[in-house]
Image (cartoon, rainbow, N blue to C red; front, side, top):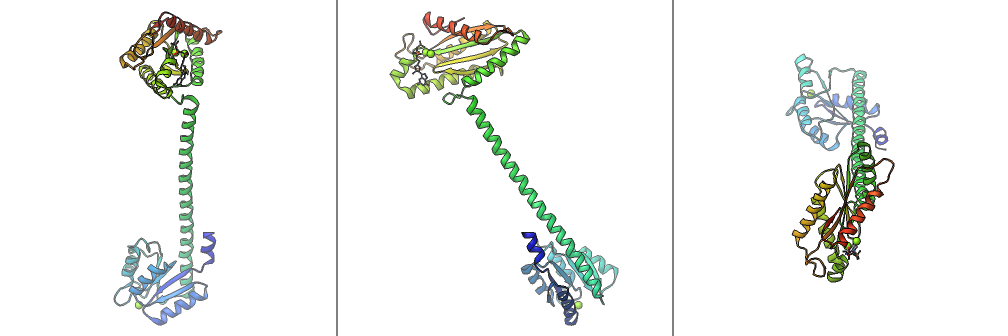
Length: 333
Ligand code: GH3
Ligand code: MG
Ligand code: MG
Ligand code: MG
């Protein structure tokens, strides 16, 4: 649309010459050729007009009173608004030094007087074609920049959405620990890997003692808060990058410890249990302590390719049951 408008609109040429007959001749021939030509006879008016109308081209005389053509051109080139307007000098001066000076101040072409009409028209058309192409390139460039910008934004949004989705899929909303789905997947993956490597895989099952009583005493909101505190403590106790702590459900947590034997995992379990004791979270309706405590079931084995990780879960679950049975607030293997 913009391009179409530019083509349909007559190109505007500003002609600057202090000799009226010269000016008139130039204006007549440019108008006949189909350009919109406007004439002025001094530098100051030329600058004002250029600044206001932004002509597509300036035909500029050099010898003029007050301000000569070189100065006018310098002025045009020193302003961001008018810098891009091509200037063709048209002058009776035909010394090489004048021509060099004309290009030095930013002119794009030089025509000597007396001029041939056909030559002026050819040189004018030449510069206007260049200018049109230059504008097209600039527009194209602008569009490309916009497109790249939009793509970068779209990509960033997509990445953010993916990260959010990943969190939703893998994290437990209340505790921000890995959820059951994430745990199942990781356990299966590590089971296969350690079966091939013939390395031990350990599991710790943790369950808060008398948590039903906790809710009954302090309310569910406080219960949720307690779950978050215990979760944070568990998360902070997991040191190796390959270890995974997850919320197994309710007030039960599970830790996957790859390449860790039974001694190592008992140590981890005991650190967590002890840290929780040190936190001294009040639990006045617990039958084992005045504070919130954990029972831990620990198990460790070298996975067999042809068996399932459920073996490990059953075993850890049984160990946890034994820890409960033996009086809670303890680790059983
Ligand atoms: P035990 O020592 O044998 O483990 O006793 P317990 O009371 O902890 O075990 P029980 O399985 O009887 O009760 C678990 C309680 O955990 C009951 C349930 O309301 C509470 N619970 C489970 N999930 C949540 C939760 O997301 N928020 C809160 N506030 N409580 C929860
Ligand atoms: Mg003159
Ligand atoms: Mg439970
Ligand atoms: Mg419990």
